[in-house]
Length: 390
Image 1 (cartoon, rainbow, N blue to C red):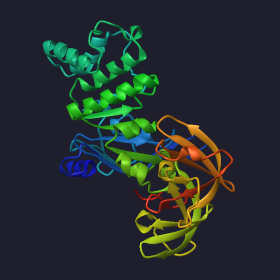
Image 2 (image 1 turned 180 degrees about the vertical axis):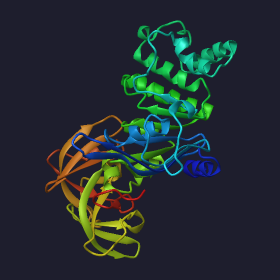
Image 3 (image 1 turned 135 degrees about the vertical axis):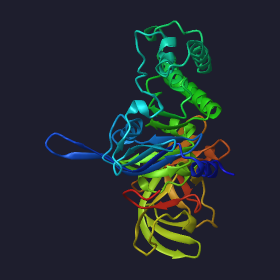
Image 4 (image 1 turned 45 degrees about the vertical axis):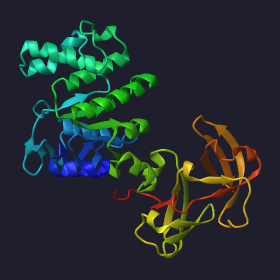
């Protein structure tokens, strides 16, 4: 059973978080309004971490705050562990302190006058856990997140990375089944961030909590999320496993935001059998019908063709038996470690191609010709604008 199927089955048994038709509007000065949450529905299954990914202003943090009880939506429902904590229809609104979930903030939110141990113990003390149990659980969770031995230190005396580990320990110490993360790694340096991603993934597997994780960092989303929800202006533009969102974007917005993509505008030229011809700025391309995610295939239908740079192929010479290859000019050859980026141009179209050492890179020269091949099974035809249904 694949990971995505397993999690869908888990959600069918017992969703940990359910967001149903949620709407949130803010009034601005002068009478105008914005809608950061626009009829969003989303479920998080048992042992699942769903990442909310998107640029600033897309609504991801507002959605998280609505689930946490820090913002009150205008319409819809929120259900946590089978208990309705918000319903506009039923008039239900549970405040944040009654939702029985944990949250890790971007700013750490550690109390400066409390020691590390006191900060982590706070959720347990508020639940009247016996003192001996508190001491043991605090020691265990601090060791688990890699800051054992810092119990007596104050937050101002430890590094940013250590503060983030303490904030994570405080969220996990109460064994909450639901944990919310608001860009928790954005304030630490790249090396610490990479290590914390690895540790967080391991802890999520070991403890089995479910969570919503907000980030604008694609690497975090791809590494941590069992599923990724890409948000665009308060709506879900794409929802699926990291591989699905990257390899099969349902619209141009998702293709542009997640990873690097070559995108060419065009229109349907004709359909035949298992393939579709698309007339693009680059030339006429033949695409497998399975890679078409537009509703209409009538000639003249506007579309966009999306191809990831690692899927393209570049040849130093055009074989006689490959008439579909497109002649281009090599503009730059850039070594990037795991791959070499070849920048080529056809007319006013700049194209990025990623090649590996096993390819014939040495035969290419800057300023010289090359022949571009767009594999029909690796291109994707999507709506040219707007948000498609994921």
